[in-house]
Image 1 (tube, protein in one colour):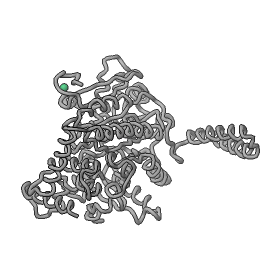
Image 2 (cartoon, rainbow over the protein chains, first blue to last red; image 1 turned 60 degrees about the horizontal axis):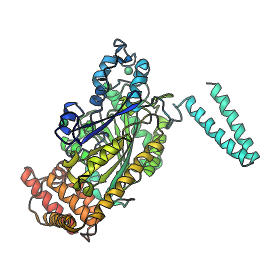
Image 3 (cartoon, helix red, strand yellow; image 1 turned 90 degrees about the vertical axis):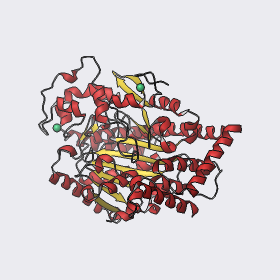
Image 4 (cartoon, each protein chain N blue to C red; image 1 turned 120 degrees about the vertical axis):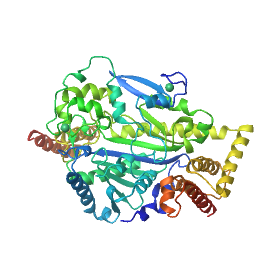
Length: 176
Length: 350
Ligand SMILES: [Zn+2]
Ligand SMILES: [Zn+2]
């Protein structure tokens, strides 16, 4: 496969971009990837923690290159009260300054996350203490499935215990 | 807390213990990115705030009776540039951490756990195991994460999950990767084709020592690109199933070599073996290619009486910074190449 950019060298860097929920693939040679600032970490010590192998900040700024008028450039003057970062500052580095930034730039978040991940909602692990109601809700859902199983298996005693647990959790959820 | 302990490769789990499919998968790694709520991300931290996070993490782990005897803390500010590069050659830290004065790393005895503090995120927890065992690595990292979460308030949003300095890690904050040795696929020019297929399922591939056909040592890392909208288990299943397919095609390619191709490969393997066991000078770049050839020879039964763990070890121990660190007297590149050649010969004769 040839590099899409220069059409001269073999493409060794393959990137999947997700734009408006549609996957786009880019195949580049190492030189063109570098030029596009998707810097590959090469050399010894390369199996480091930069994981995906390219500078994420630079990769991210390439997500912003999409010509469509997205809400990304609307609120340039928003400033995070937690760390003072502006959205423009973020677009330059691709890094937020603190966890509050996610709240500050809420309006810009969904299109950006969709572009990067194709999705906007977390479905994985929830921390026990800072997970808030989400953890309780997940536990309730899990118990409801268990309850259905118990009922199907005609294990009514077990079902009663599970039902009590669900009630307890629902009360806890409402007390938040 | 001596660095010499860390350099003792005989204690490193992923090098010495056998793992599933370890003829092709050298190691499996799972990493969680975590941050403390209401504290600026590391690049905006003051020295004191940074130090507090290091202490909080360290003492939280120290309170655990099992871990407390098992872990050691290394501050980046107390290490030389060579020592830090060496730790990155050993896959214990990233160069980003090495370059941060505020950074620290906590490592356990068998070096399967490493927790980087104040890298891009406050915490980068990693578990690394031999062979293809991402599920097991996830189980282990989950426990460490739970333990830390009992004391530390992690930044978490009910909708988008764990909050990270870079939005490319948000959600699970998880990166699952496997390091694979793929000499036959590389030799038969099949690697590019496979990699473009991989990128279609949301995974990323890169050479560990250089890219594409220039990948020295034929070592590649495959990892997930997307961290949001899928559960940890699903992400891992995706990486595992792709890794399984690559393992099969690497094995098939090895088996299908016949006639002249097989003869040429055997010749190349045995020549490389000859060089490693006889040469007076070996550079780190050459070492990678020869070690890869010999490793393939061992896996294919062409070279006998040599343990694969020795070659895993040599992949790490012939790195420029590692050689510099153990060869206290070798100061010029020539002296280091001489030291490296001696070192390899000794290891291979055992
Ligand atoms: Zn090109
Ligand atoms: Zn902020």
